[in-house]
Image (cartoon, rainbow, N blue to C red):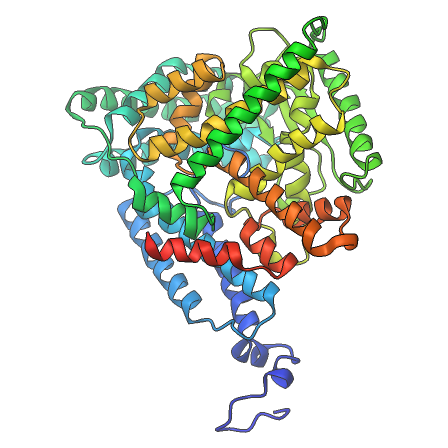
Length: 571
């Protein structure tokens, strides 16, 4: 057996040079790869739906959401089994890259525990089930591909499945639903009343005849279930107490075991406050500098808006490449605006209108669906209507970074783990392009980028205060609306999302600060070998990897990871 002698430990150098079952049995990196593959196949079928664009995944054929007690018990059982196998792996003699992959899988497993046992949206938040029932339909509608028979069949099946998901919601929420979460869900359902019927009526014209004919019946099934769920929540609300905040111990678990951050919550707050002051100072300086600048003009209509964005996206790519900031190969897919289809327009309350595609469509252009430009659009949409580059340097960066990640030669690096590195990259790129001069010709856009810096800094405080129970959703809404300032609808949507997803809001600011730390440390450690474009190209490629792990792999420095581990033990 090529050097294997019974009764002796196999020689790793020989055995691990082989292929097949022998390698799998005796080499930890192969065991890790197999475990990661099995985990992600399971995760694609069990990941909760969200209004955010980054965590969206392509579900297995025939998939339907299941939050029954049996499904939750099965999730717990599977998580325990995956966790046991992960702990049994000995990667101590493996190269750093393999050990990083092992920590990546540990982060993914910790995230499942965080969702299932700590934030527990499935038994505390009625809005969770709005996403689990209608979110998968919304994701199907976001796909810019034609509506073929298979896709139409999935939409019909998901519509008819809505009553079962909302029946599971009643069972799971009966004892622990929080009053604030319930009020938020009811407000959302009230404002969106009739939107599903409007969307599906518009969709009929796009479907194959067979499914167009039966869509109204499937829609009625779903709409009646939503109305009944709304009535049930209204009945339950007077008897509900407030859901307990996740609290300091659970928040620390997320910070140090999921996101692998080397900073305690108190330090994160201090970092956010410091960045708030810096953002306010920068915005004030820009407003004084550009006080006599003329007001920007909106595009005449949505067609001009789409054309302007396509030209701007090409110009931004040329700018980044030409300034030595980031490579923009011709093979890299584009990020395009498109008019909001009539079947999507009534449902935009369900989430971000970006179709970032997926591993099976990684070379297809990503699409952002946009409304006709007008001055009363919400905060981010208004800025993009005046200058599409404000979206290109953030959401467009997500579109690039995830596509590069999906091409990674290591499958462990292709998946979303936590938003801190991803959002840190996009947020950091905004400021990078501001200082590089991209917005020198657009004073209002430069001021907006600085104002958005103020928002992202404020999110750190709001996120932590919501998680610790120091702010209610309404108080967080007031804080965001008054201190940014921003429109109240956007502020309320942000506060609700952050309350149900602790740790996400702080990811923008803290991820950017980690990247700046990594960059400055790389400059120090690499000296003349440091090259900015090469640094950013690697950062984009490894953009799903927590930055404490990137620091270890790139520079050989474990200090941030060791500090995260120390804080995790003390939590």
